[in-house]
Structure formats: C-alpha cells, structure tokens
Length: 292
Image 1 (cartoon, rainbow, N blue to C red):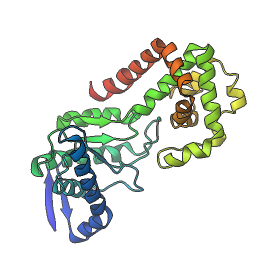
Image 2 (cartoon, helix red, strand yellow):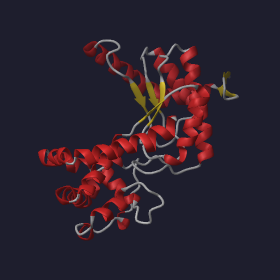
Image 3 (tube, rainbow, N blue to C red):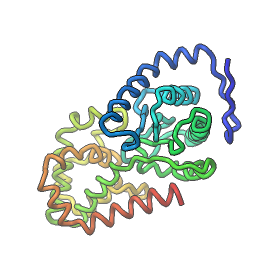
C-alpha cells in the first residue's frame, strides 16, 4: 500500500494493488488514446497553440480521489500538457438549472480534488495552469459560495462551462423585445416540444425533464413576453419558473441553428437587449458570485 498526503486538506490517500488494477481496467486505455489524440493535434497545430482539457463528467459514478490522482499521473506519463480536468462530482449537474445534492459531500470532494490537483502540479510536473473544470457549471448557484471559498483557500482558478446559459439569455432577450423576437422564441419552444425525444437523447445523463410538467405549446403560442420570461428565467423565487421548460430550451439550440439567417437576423435586430442580458447574467450571477 502507498500512502500519499495531500497538503491543505489534512487527507491521506491510501492506494493498494486492487485500486491500481481497477484504475487500469477503467481508465488507462482511454488516457493512452487521449495521448494519441493530443500528439496528432500537436502535429497539426504546433505545441502550445491550443488548450487541452480531459473530461470524464458523464460517467455513471463520480471518480474517487484516488482515481483522480492516478488519472493525473497517467496523463503526466503520456506527456499531455493538460490545462483543465473535468471529473464527475457528487450530486446532479443538469443543464441550465441549479445543483441538486448534498452540498457538504460536494464540498468535501471539491476540496480534496483541488488539493490533489495542486499536489499533481508540484509532484508530477503537470502545467502550472492546470485547473479544475466544472461541466454544466452554469446556474449552480447553491454551490457557488462553496467554490468561491475553496478556490481562495488554494489560490487557484477554475474553468466553468457557461455556453448554454448564454443561449438562454438570448431567448429571454428575444422574448423581451416582443413582436418578431417573441414569436421566434415561442416557435423554438413549440418545435422543441414536438421533437422532445430527439433533442433529449444525446443529453440523457445531464437533464431531468418531466414532459408532463412542460407547458402545452398551444398555451405558449398565446403567452405574453412576461409569461415566457417568467417561465424561463432562472429565478427560484418566481412561482412561474419552470425548470422543465428551461432545460428543454437549453438543449433546443438545434432548432435555432436550423433557422439560420432568420435567427441571426433577429439576434442582430435585438442585439442591445440581448447583450445586456448576457452581460448581466455572466457578470452578476456567475463571475461575481464565483470570484469576487
């Protein structure tokens, strides 16, 4: 058995042969493939001309702290200059909605993983810029205070994926504009509702949508701007907020993409409203809560 003390966490990891065997069976081949992919991209792009992230956030179970350390050791052995690593955390990280789970358990896990990353940077010669990455990390407001405290403790940064929440702010901006923008926003929901199974299938691990709680498209077709916005806007204090509606629209970006120039024209037409929403959402709800 090997004992490894992780500074700043007061934790010691005990690694035995059975754990090494399980790690080898579950992760080693994938990391070797990641090494091959990295070398192929490096050959085309040139060293230090791209950012490398390795993610395993859509597995069935969270990785154990020992698995995280062994994964980082294998990455170092493959000489992959990884800049971000995205594990699966305890709890539920569904797209566009708040965290569900035991916050104390998440806090303990997050603290230890940050400690392991700092240890790996020092002992395994991984890049100084290596950060913990949180996938489906937008809108997880109930754990942002925890994240803020822990990244200050370790004097480190994080990578938080927020692309989906920006798309939803575009929809809110279109709905706020009224007229053609509101009509377009309604149409996107109605088409997404009618293609529910198709849109949900690729995201089954990171959504939890109860179709019975989605508003009837015939009713949505007659909604005012305010009704659409209250249902979509991530405001837990609003009685009309509907996380099922929000999640379906989150994965419904494909509908907007298929609209092509029609969608882009409306974005340009209502750019001022949309830009203000996007900026306020990213700065006030995310950056300030996480880093300030």
